[in-house]
Amino acid sequence: MKTLKLFTAILFLSFLGLTSCQDEIDNENGQNPNTNSANSETASNLERSSMYDGSFDDFLDGMSCSSILLPVTATINNTEITIVSESQYNLVLNILGELTNDQDSIEFQFPLSVKLSNYTEVQIANQTEYDALMNACEQAEQNAEDAINCLDIDFPITILTYNLNIEQTGSVVIESEQQLYTYMNNFGNDEKFAINYPITATLNGDTIVEITSDIDLKTQITECLATDKLKEEAEENANTLEGVLVDGAFKVESFVTAGVDTANDYANYSIDFANDLTCLAKHTVNATIDDVQGTYAVTSELEVFLNLTFSGNATFELLNNTWEVTSHSESSISLQSTTNAAITLVLAQI
Image (tube, rainbow, N blue to C red; front, top):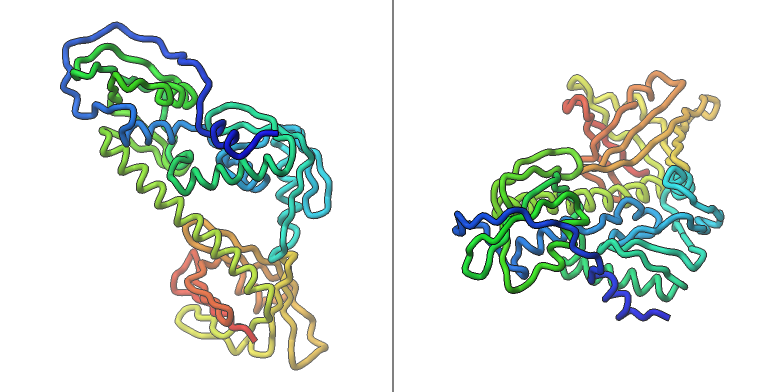
């Protein structure tokens, strides 16, 4: 049985061979301000940025240091499912998303195989070994040794090589993340390297930037990691808000549009949010008045959003909007229209 020590070692050691080839030597210029050693910050940034990204299935395995190799069988909230391709991930997400504010559970059938951040594949025999792998991942995150997934370098790039006297000895063309990871992981202490700038990279999956130096690379990584942290905080706040909505009934305390507060139009209604993403507005004075059916969804990016959709009642349909959550507590939720900042809504717990 593999131990925690073994998994930690597997997670951070690379067994891949160097596949780059040396280009013709150029001894002309050895004074490169971006020259680095194997244990430099730039070497660490390049290695972490080129690690295998296992975050795409975090909803399934709960850790970004690895991904589960398919097929795999799991019991998800008491429903057994065998996942044979990534196209079935939606089945998992649908099961997990059936209810909000519930305690999701995922139990895997062992053995299963995973791909680690160093691109190696290992078999996990039981839950104990799986827990050891998760602990190793958490330790890597705490020590800032995990993958940097917010910056994707655009390949190919060229690495210039130097001896310890900072004389250029050659160059290597890197064609992929895996090749870059292998190269940096195996870089020797008796030589130095420099990136042949400029290079381009994609930040947070959508922004393309040009990087012109090691300092620029560090800055871009620092900024995208900060954005990642904001996204994580927003996701946590969204989960908290879902719990607040489901745990209580609400009234419209304020609804301001065109400078006029029309909250009185909703004074006799209470709104209940169910954990199946439906909501119901009930007239609290006259039971013969039909209930108003609706749906809701809580999402997050850098901020938290509440989408409301009511039907069959013109007054409540005025609330249909994607609202940015400007603040919330257990007793009050303040919202602002994402299309018109002058339109605001406040829901107060009854």
